[in-house]
Length: 281
Image (cartoon, rainbow, N blue to C red):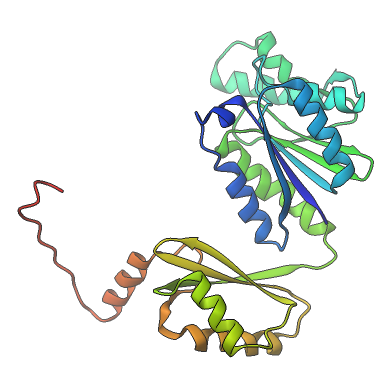
């Protein structure tokens, strides 16, 4: 199942905004055994947007478009969908109701700029936005399902987690599980070489992945849940034995400082620090 990601916004091209959304989307997909096979970033240019959307619709099963759903003239995603697939813009009653309610809650006047966000390509379904004014868009063209999402991270995250991921997971033939091992004191190339040398028969259907965040390294086991748990346990134990004390946690969110704190509490120990003669550095 191929998933492409299209990011839009001139501010991404100029560096005014750092792209963190694609990292979040990639990690979210990775957690359910999916990956982004192609990622493209374009500015607020209608011709380039139309071309990329049209191309992706022939290349992938799912396309996630991020950005360009706002009320201003440089928000072009709805227009790009219209031109790419010859699907006229029509006022969506659910989108209009959402925007109207949003304006009432914010105690602001409903303007033509706000109402621009209620016009979606004919045949679209809305993806609810729990926070902002712009609803997401779900649109089917041929074999390709297109999800259009807002660029604001706080609006994007629940849309991905609560609406898009469940649909992608349902479409998968198999479900996947990911286990994480956070490692300190061993580099990526060194670990890979040790695995190649000492676990020569590592199976292809239990995939190893790496994510470096110096000075740490996260190793991921990605496997289909249909694999026998006894087999997974066998290879997991081999990896743990190989890395031994270099593994400081198996939680995705646990930092080394948190791990040290937990060990101190467990042992009823305390830490004191003293700072002097550094000029506040």
